[in-house]
Length: 293
Length: 302
Figure 1 (cartoon, rainbow over the protein chains, first blue to last red):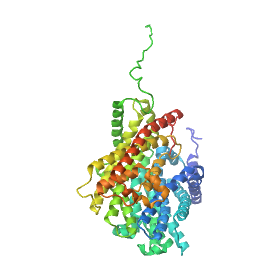
Figure 2 (figure 1 turned 90 degrees about the horizontal axis):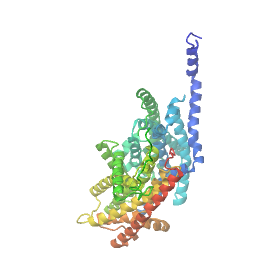
Figure 3 (figure 1 turned 60 degrees about the horizontal axis):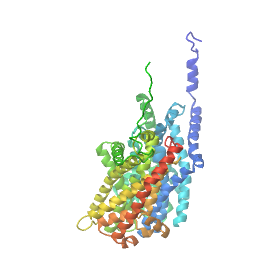
Figure 4 (figure 1 turned 135 degrees about the vertical axis):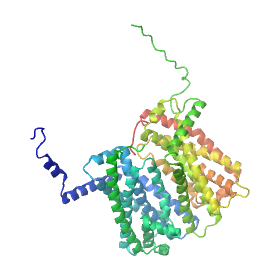
């Protein structure tokens, strides 16, 4: 022991405890991801009201669009596409409120302090939220498709199930990666965050061509398909699951898959840097944990 | 040492007031309403610079409108009558959604976000006009969006009534409709305060259900028979139909359109009177129960 009572090997011990090997880091990150994903996947079994609300909003919207289409005597294939779009919408809603808005909500409810003080990176937490959210929403999306099909007699003709699965996977991955980017934006937003969430809802449903083909938006559709994961995902899924509507697609499916893959990579990188930036700025300014209201 | 005499507290000036969410005279209620409306404006209207607020008020409802028009165009070429039907329904529903969610969100905001409801309750303010004031400002902000939607609708070919809007009819249906929807909103707020989970979600769920049932974007006849009956029982159905007649000069297609305007007004009036009589009582019962059970103090972290 030194004269001041500080152990002589303190530096070495701090180094040993904080400088982990790559395998240790990966194992720790994986544990963090699983730990954060767990409540999102299994939480609904303890809070049935969450499941109810996750299902009721897309279902009500779906019914409105279906009745609107029926009042106009539209082709039944569009009703199948609407049900599919409603399933995709559950993921998008989850991206807005359970990803983008989550850190802000955690801050306001006091959990953010725990995240920051815990020896876990925000990136691992965000990835856990995304994985848990996507798995939980997949269950809800399945219920919506099943319920919508039974209720309105929708039919699908899936000739390439693997391609459809890949489209869904890439679309969901790109959306959640965008959600992490937005989480950083929401975190630095004040009262604007709620309104920002609203702006990401209906306007993005329109731009994303969720219920009507993105092709009908002209130049805006092309723009949307390049920046908004919802657009290529919805367009490609409609072409693959409802072949009668393939002609309504803006781009061929392989091209849209490529766009989704690029989006996933770009948004993942952006989210990594934005979270690191926000955390650094937040610590420096002392505002990361300050309630917006 | 001076002798102490018992402190006399004069309670006579306030003995006429019952303790609870509905108390005081009309002047007290008016003061509470104005104060809460100013507060609501501070919360809802000044979160951004006026320009950005206006952009927000424009973008979202127009996107909503665009979404419905895009879906409508799937069924064939858009005709002006269909555009008018959807534009007015969607515009009025902006107000319906805001006014219906207003009281619940105000109560929950004050309870959980700002944690001030216990203090409001302890003041001589009556919680009922406070909630109504908050709802009215939300409705007013939504009305700006509604006007913008109708303006855009007129620009894209919505056929307006020859000779301009029927202002007397518009004024009557708007007054009745707004009164009924605020009444439903405060009743819903009193229910939601009792809930432990997801209280925020219920007004949105109710508004979504009403949107589906009240013929806002498609004729009521499109719905299955049982849902048509529920839709016909909602004052919002008659309100939207009344606004369509006042602005477009034409009735909706289907059964609703076959009714005369005086009959429509009668139905809307009866519905509004019933709601106006029942809603304050429901609110008082709900808030009193919440106070007794300690729900006004709790935070659900939802």
